[in-house]
Image (cartoon, rainbow, N blue to C red; front, side, top):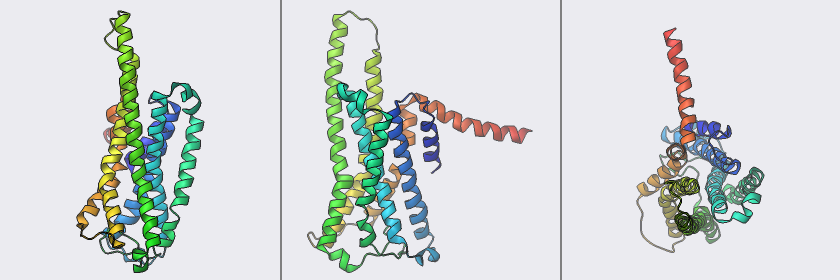
Length: 300
């Protein structure tokens, strides 16, 4: 959680050399990731791991589940919104000035958060209010009637298709279009520079595009890789319970999927540190100043 808080603080200061819209999206992603870590790791995994019976007696698991899924879905769709914003910046010069603003970003992020919350209300009715503590990643009871229900089964399949299945497709499509545009425009720019006998080895415009595409690919690629196993298991589990397919998938696959999904909420800070020099400087200051004060206090 600490790295997410530090990321939010650093990005909110606006000293990383990023546009206002990009900063809004990255802060929103970090905030959503922080909520997922709190709702999933702190309020879900720790009680299960330590067998806290007092938690088992609190009948709020379905509310907890709805909030957790809403935060997770917001995190996923914030990544899609960020990818689309980068696509507009790089590929759509005519609408860039009107779309890529902090006001538009705030409107998009607010709409995504509201829709994600409304979409995950069915989880309140699918899951029971009681916790199940048996060292299993599933933390709410689901009745047999719900498990074999075609209606609720279809609802869950649609949920998995919309998040994260559909975002997978959107992110891949936007990335392909962005790379194609950058490749074509870079070749054209290189030909113009050669025709004009420009001797500079580095083109500032090309360098800016390169940094943008590195950040974009790092964030979206991280999301796709770390969510793949969880999405595959979730789809298989629901289709299996509907008796559409037969065959067993080991439980450790689900646990690995959960682990990687949670990891995806903690890796963006590392991505920013690797790809953004200004972020690295701010991060060093955040680490150096407290350490300096501690050392100074110990000495004196």
